[in-house]
Amino acid sequence: MKTFGLIFVLYHPTEEFLANLAKASTTCSNVVAVDNSPEADARLHERLRERGMQVIFNRNKGGLAGAYNRGAEVLLAQQCEVIFLLDQDSDIDASFFERMMQACIELGTDVFLLGPKIYEINLQRCMPIFPPGKRLPKAVRIDDQAAGLLPTLCIISSGSAISAAAYQKLGAFREDYFIEYIDIEYSLRASSQKVPVYMNAAVTMRQTTGQIERHGKRFTTNHAAWRRYYGARNAVHCLNLYRSYWGLHRLSGLLAIQQVIRVLQYEPQRLRKVTAIACGYLDGVFGRLGTFEDLHPHIAAFCRQSKRNRVSINGNSSATATESGS
Image (cartoon, rainbow, N blue to C red; front, top):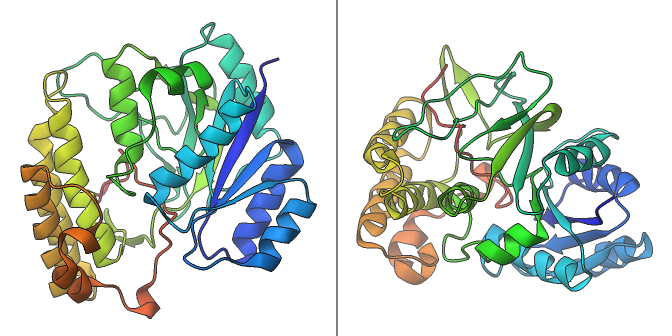
């Protein structure tokens, strides 16, 4: 059996999220909890260490990507062969690691990315896969599939298993992306370098993406303005990086327009969010990366979310959770 460890990312964790961590730690003995909260909670950190977990206080340096990279450094130093990533709002069952590790062995290679099937709780359906091989891949629904390792172009980071050999070949997650599209970029990087990417249809993880609200066949994520900035910017930059492999770069402008339409239709703070999307899109086109605050301090201050609309920075980006509806 391959050795494995878990990177669990925290950000202002609620009791519900800490319960998710406790559940994961009962079936994985090697847990690195990376706290991305802006202020250290010494009592929480001590409590986690008493339960046998390793704790890294990252203070959100490099965002979600930075948390993954700091955790990976620890697990690689311990000679772990498989690295699992899990965000605090992800819900797994007791057999998750056992069945995912079984699939890792069945792949028959030491270089891979493997994700579970993702059930979006608020949408009450599974995210589709994007089978590779076509210049412009199309989404394929897998709600009814309960077995098999399905080749796909992208997986989301939370719940994924990355072999140590794959991480060492591909390198670290992009910390200049901070949060959105870090998993999509990593998956496309893997596919472009012939590292296989699969979704394990036999294992389902329950996940929430933002604060999704359904409006008939459409939905919106209600992401704060700063999240909208990173989503628009990183989509343009990421999809352009791999334009020689796939035609996905043609979609980045449409994705930005779609975000604007959903915000105008259904969300509060419209001016702030549309400003953030427009700014992010232009930064993506011109390759300006880094944190929103460093690049545009005044615009970022204007777009800063209100406390009542606060959304965890720990949330996932997703190649498949677009706001296009059905």
